Length: 469
Image (cartoon, rainbow, N blue to C red):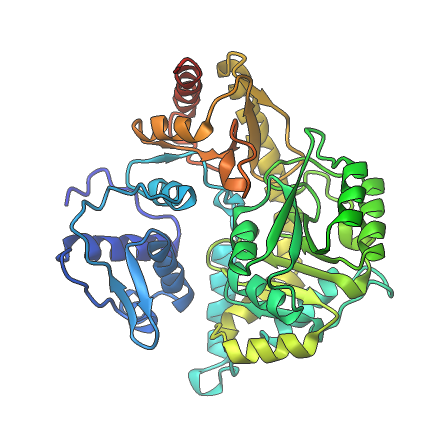
């Protein structure tokens, strides 16, 4: 292997991912190969189990490996070249393509790539490991480490009426698992869910897995719903659940005014609809004191969910939820699932919050995101040539762009793959075919690459697609 032009991975999980990928590529492809367990690999590479788990999750998403219960991970036997990543599922194709060597991913939405707290997190973890030798290490907690649950409860408490206790907080291994258990605990599987559209693909996928009927309510360019349409929908349809972004709408980037959120919460309470507030990007709204739905929602029909990785980085892959009701059902399901999450890593995350490192970091990250957004906006103004409509986002890490002429952005995606450029077509963010002429363009990308050239290629691909009969 020629190592002259190989860039050293910036994060631990990336190094583990590359190690596994190299092992898979040299292994015979016509037979399955058993891979090291999470702990074996962590010991071999002297890294955390969380890093090995995240690397395996990436490979599993790409279809390179699969897990057998109680046996571990195995490679997939295949007679096709490894670089043939196109599948019938657009999301799988986008993610697999973005991870291919030499690809420029304009689709990856990872704010912590700009600035993470991974190094402070690992330093705190090492200090805690010295305080808690293996024989005295904290026991695994089925609902999450008590210290972290207490810190999160305090962080989300804003008044005596809108307060949280540690018993209302549950920590899971990832967002998918947390949403799955939440829907089951609240007996929402198979019911009707209302989502803002465009909607997070992760949310859509989990609602589909729970066999829910999904109603998409489009957001305007100003980030607002048609309130009359929403009210009529709630009166007409048996909606049991609404999933809404806490601050700026993701991936659209707009911001719902406080009076709209207040009115929406009144209607949700009137029709006894559960509100699932997605707080994944809640701290990354450019307006630091932006209104949140939970400021107005019925606290007894409110569930807030989020992850740590958006702020801290991939070394904090856990997800969490806060819910004041049905805690008994949640406890039973979390006990049955038996997440094996590192208690030391959870304690380290709690110390980052309690020392106000996360709050200070979020302020810096918002500034960096705004700077990168403005830089990308200037490039778009220079190179779009009137082919892309761009509305400046109010937060997050991406633009929600629309072609000014009708084009199928999935076909544009296919054209750009030939040039080793990956975009996220708007179809990813809708279950019923909305947003075909849109794409999500992120600005937390590899700025050492020629982004100006990539944007020019994007515009040329849109032009070519618009001129195709």
